[in-house]
Image 1: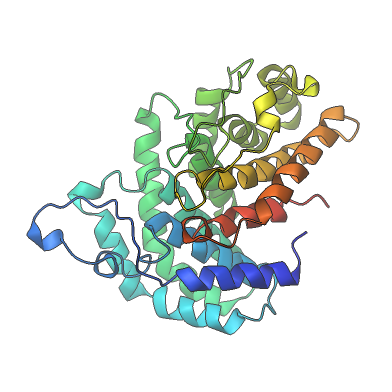
Image 2: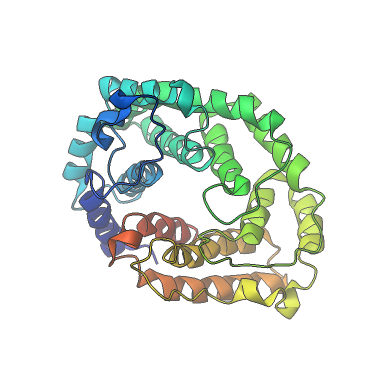
Amino acid sequence: MLTADVASQFASIALRHLTREYPNSLLHVLADDNDAVTPRQLHPVFYGSYDWHSCVHGYWLLASLLEHFPSVPQRETIRTTFDAHLTPERLAGEVAYFERPTARGYERPYGWAWLLALQGQLHRMAESGDTDARRWHDALRPLADLLVARFTEFLPKCTYPLRVGTHFNTAFALALALDYARDVGNAPFAALLNDTAVRWYSEDRGYQGWEPAGDEFLSPGWMEADLMRRVLPADTFLSWFDAFLPDLLKGQPAAMFVPATVSDRSDGKLAHLDGLNLSRAWCLRQIAQALPENDARRALLANTAHVHLTQALAQVEGDYMGEHWLATFALLALMAEPD
C-alpha cells in the first residue's frame, strides 16, 4: 500500500538524485564545438537524475507526493527545490534547447509524455488552490505547449505504432498525454490522441506475448491494453480486450504473467526489468478495475499485479542505475491500488 512512510522513502530517493548532475547520459547532438558543454548548461532545470526524462518524472513523483501526502516530512525541501528550478528563466532555457534544429525529435515520445504528465499534475494541484503549484505550472506552460505542438505535428504522420517495451513505446506516451489532455481540458488534443490510439491498435487481435525482451521496462501488451481502457467506451473495451487476449483465463500468453528476472542491477539496461515488473503491476491493477466485478479475469489480473509488485518494490532503492527512476514506476503502481 502507499503509506506515509513509503511516500517519505520515495521523496528521499528522488531528492537525492533530482539535482545530481553526474553521472549523466546525454542524448545530445553536437552542431559545433560550442555545443560541448555540461548537462546543467544544456538543461537549466532537468539536468539531474542521470538523464533528462528521469529528471522530469522525478519532479512528477515529488509533485504527486505533495498532493497525496501534504505533510510528507520532505515537503519544505521539495517546495524549495521546485521554487529554485521551475522558474520562467530556467524553463526558457529548456524551451530554447527544444527549439534547436537538431532537437526536433529530442525525447520523443517518452520525455514529451512525462513533461505533460508533470504539467497535468501541477495543473490539478493549482486548481485545488496550491498557489506554489500555480506558479510552477505557469512557468512550465511554454514547454508543455511546445510539446503539445510537437505531438500534434508528429502523430498524424506517424503511420505505425512502436510496440517495443522501452522509451519509444507509443502506447505509453499516448496514455500519459491523454491523461494530461483530459486534466487540462484540451479537447482537440485529447481527440487527436484518442483517434491515433484507435488507428494504431483497435484491430489488434490474439496478442502473442513475446515478451519481455532483455531490456524492457514496459510490457507492450499490457501497456496497449491499458491505453485502450482509457480510449474506448467500457463495452467496446471489453469486446476489444476479449479479442486481444482470448486465452487470458488460461494464463496465456504465459510470459506475461511471470515477473521478469534481473541478473545484474548494476547494468542499467538489465535493471530495466525491475521497472517492467512495476509497470506491469500498474497496468494490471488499472485494467482489472475496468472489468466487471463478476469477471473472473479481474482477480487473476489483481493477483498477478500483486506478485509483480511484491517482487519489485524491494529493488526501488539500491544501485543508482535503478534508483534514479524506479520509484516513479513504483508510485504509479501503488497509486493504482484498488479502492
